[in-house]
Length: 44
Image (tube, rainbow, N blue to C red; front, side):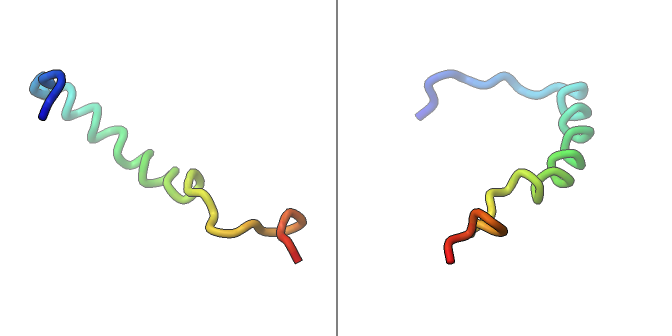
């Protein structure tokens, strides 16, 4: 069920998404939350 219909992407939209994609991949590791605390914040 869609609340609002999304507009179709044009050529420029696809081009911008293609430019953004490598940045998202490069930042993914930095933005991912670690599974456990590390360093001085880690419980012992």
